[in-house]
Structure formats: C-alpha cells, structure tokens
Length: 230
Image (cartoon, rainbow, N blue to C red; front, side):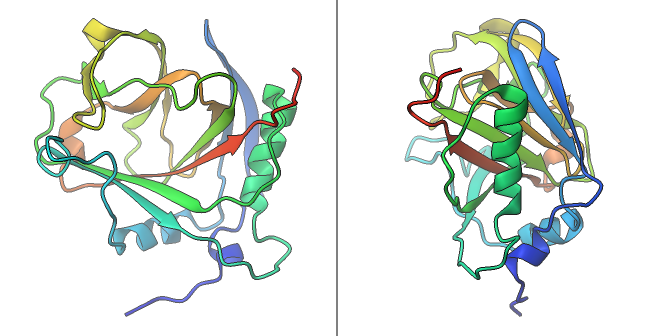
C-alpha cells in the first residue's frame, strides 16, 4: 500500500541540529552536522520499502553478483512550501560559511545510495573504491547516514593509484592501492559536507554486518559557482 507524504514534512530539519567544522589532516576541512533530520527513522523506513535500481552496472560488472549497489532518486515535485528545500539551503550555507565555497542556488532531486553485500570481503582492507567525484573544484558533496548500525562511514584518502573501473568492481584493497587518512563515522542522522575532489569512499568496519542489511545514505552534489573566487 502506498504511503503518502509531503516532502517538507518527511525531510524536515531537526530544530536541535549541531554543525561544526572538522579538519582532516593533510586533506582539508569538512562540515559535520549531527541530528540533521527530525524523522530519520521514517526516511529509513521509506527506503526499506523502496524498489531500487542498479548503480554502476554492466554485463561484466560484479554488481548484482557479489553485492547490490543501487541508487534511488526522488524527483522533486514543487509544493511552494517555504521549507520545501531547507536541507539543500542548509548544505549550501554550510559550504559557504565553513568551507569557503559558494554553490549555485538550484533545486536538486533527493538521491540515495543503497548497498548490501552478497559475498562480503573477509578483510576490511578491502573497501569501496576511493574516488573523486569531480575534476577541479566544481562540486561540493554531502552524505547523510540513516542506519542504526554505526560501524561504517566515509573514508578519506591522500591518494589512490588503483587502475580499475568501479563500474566493473567497486572493491579495492586500500592497503595496497591507497593511503587512508581518516574515517568519519556514519552516525545515524549525521551529514558530512566536503569538496567532491577529495579522495574518498564508503567504509565498513565489518563487511559481514552488511549482508541482508542495507546501508543507506543520501547524497547531494552542489555545483560551485563558475565565477567563484576563494
């Protein structure tokens, strides 16, 4: 049975959210927001009930064989409510005030990454491929976590020299191909905001905990104004 909702209600910001700047040594600053949403468990429930399409998939891909890597997109239907896009406004404000980058004021669809293992790696040296989401200083990324299990997060790296296509396989031995600097814990209802050109990737402490247990995160990529000068 469908469950109707209004976007500004389900994704209402928490009155008690907490924002701070955190500096990753040798990489740069990020913004950490705790207690982002008022109803994070309801958002997680919506994702539990969703049919989610593949992400990074091809005939020779390990996706849908060794893991399910999916992306779920909700297209914004304008209602004219004053709080309709308040989380996006918050992210852009934090990017400007804490990171020093001004982003284009535009409405973005709500996008979620949904992931679970079929055949989990035995070692946590194997992680999601470290990557950069943009070339040059073009986008500010954000991730919000929704799981009760907090043994995961986003890892930041000083470099990655793995020469493989993450469309074929997202698994990477970071002990051989990257230098891990810091993992920001995926605390439930936490949002992190960071320049998308930082080397980063999803991180799991114990892969066996994510078999038949989906990892949910909401992602945004805000475009930095082309004429912006830091």
